[in-house]
Image (cartoon, rainbow, N blue to C red; front, side, top):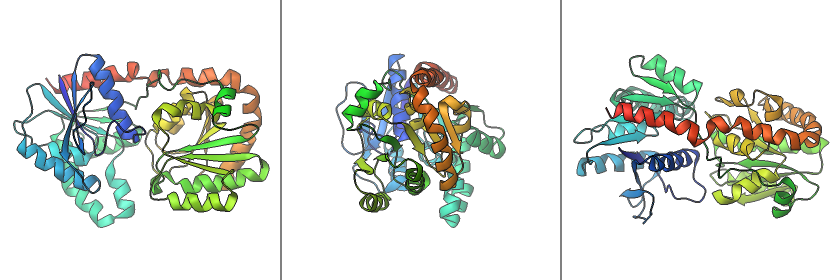
Length: 369
């Protein structure tokens, strides 16, 4: 089976986005199973021994630009036999739905696009919901929903289209714990209580809330530091906060290479997930796999994973209440980390690619007939 995956970026990026990390992880699993994987991406052709990277454009502007370039590409190129397209968004599914000859299409919903668009650009959201979304969904032989919200949305809107909920996965062999003390030394930490934020500095991730939570935590834990790994349009907000509180209190690391993340997670005392919109954050799984608890707003399927106190906390969105719960949790956590860390890693085993990969492979094989 040949699996074609459009990705609006570089799948070989040292710190890929969540969707890119999912695509790359799935590609690795499928290759191990003997399948061929081709990425349709942006940029120039990059020689890679594992996967074929086919540029659809040298440069694009945003997701819409990529979708339009992808649509043009499908009109100029044919697919080899036994190919199937795995689209990670409605836009990608819409752009590839009329490939000639037709190729089976599976849509992976990392969260329906319409609710996010409706909150920001209502008129565009209406056009999207009336044109792009239904054409993408109806062209799909099956929809994979990564969380309950996506499952409910597409089941209600398109009840006749086969749908299956399959959570995201991580590579447990890569995200393995590093000794807590050694990791802290590696990242220049001694007696500080280190909170970590990993992700794109964008409105939906709400890094501003992470800063406000951190400000309030420092009221009861003055030795606390906030380490931020990521870049994005709200970086200026973080720069301002770091200047105000001091660079030793808020440490901005920009994008941390994937290879360095296990030691960073292992060094932290807790990961802050402060998103307004999230489906199934892989950073949560990565942190738990490295033995570090997660403190998150109640988004997506977070509550399913953080169901036990040893995993961390689902916190109120209000920064004051969020900080209060974290401050109350930490004293016991610091005493029990050594015994809790293995439990956290054990809880993530069902999200390893060896557990999730076969489910997605079965969907692709069924759709490919």
